[in-house]
Length: 548
Image (cartoon, rainbow, N blue to C red; front, side):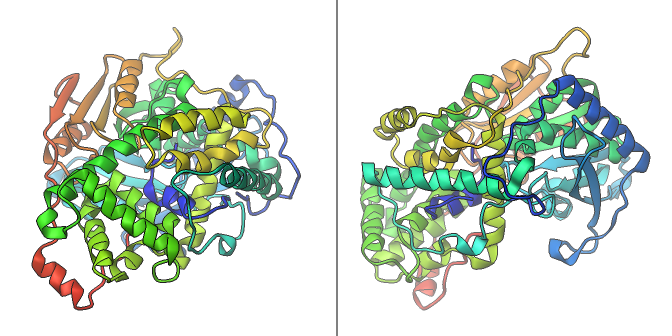
């Protein structure tokens, strides 16, 4: 369920994928997870949480490798690799924090913990948001706490291969994969899965959503919080929803932004199928916007005409890679980002226009692989793959994958096959016992009722389609409020893009109140096209900055 563009961009541009736990011994196939009852793991998590509450966290200056400025302080949290054996091997998770500023005399309300999604994304940067206008009142009341989940960054990092071995470009990805190309990708996926087992060894089964939830339970306790205040985006919404289901008595407030569909029957194979039509809608949104600004870009006055311009560029880089390293794989990865956030629409449109005028520099500046980011991208892909493959059963037979994606590609060709090949290692994943997805929202008589939560969603989100937000609200029940940004599709709604959405989230975090069970906000303004003056300046030699 890839839900961040950088991860998918890296994977889409490569023909092979990647996973390793640095200290693990190589094996040919990772064994099944320990056959302990769920209660044993729950008891282990509670024990680890009590220990963490007694020791706390020692925040100090952050290591240089984190590249975080002085106001941010860092700490290390030790958690069990296997919660069924809380006294067994431990792994270290990195944590970052900026204390509540209390500006304006605001009373401190505790720690706000953030997970940015993925899975595979690091939240270590989160405290830096304290300086942004949309976060200032929240940062006055809360310590902003970020962390790198298990496997990510310096938190027991996972990797499947040397990042230098990843394709540096160009890669050529066919629009309609032939049987021979599909076989190549199947072989690459099997090799990737074997690499994961060889490098991660017996640790491989323990990178799961359930263990991420247990880690969050321990982190809450280590921060000295009896109840968790949490903001999760994308996959972070699923993490938060599972936490609220398993630990309802330990939830204070929870913002779930760009919600994953938590239906166990859709975790994760069918959720990935659902993304294809979502991304197709967003690709249409981008092309329609470009068509409305034909006077600025000259790419066509209809979405179909803009598609034809894109195909001219794609055909050109298939024949002769732009800048020597931009093939169709890199091109697609760069333009997939238009489905995630419309802020990049002007520069992506201008890059196409410039290329067709004979200037490839803007395109190469935006689409070229960044060697300095190869390690991070490889690590993110590894964690994404491990968590999703471990979390649930996936079809093992290629016939199912081929049938489902062939059918989807007839109406949603933009992203279908790239997404399929990204997730294909799960078909041959070398962990025999997969997790069983939690039935989010299910509660027993011995547990308190589910806490009040706030879900935020964009109606045309492609990465986490809107029906998932409705399903999450249904499962969390009457205490879950939903704020919908109508007619918009940027992935990740809260945080400075839409004032109406931001007001609802801020009110909830500061007071616990919501404006109703379901409320709507008008869409944020569309981006303005690149001006003719800007285009002229760039034509004189300026290069658009690469997308990070």
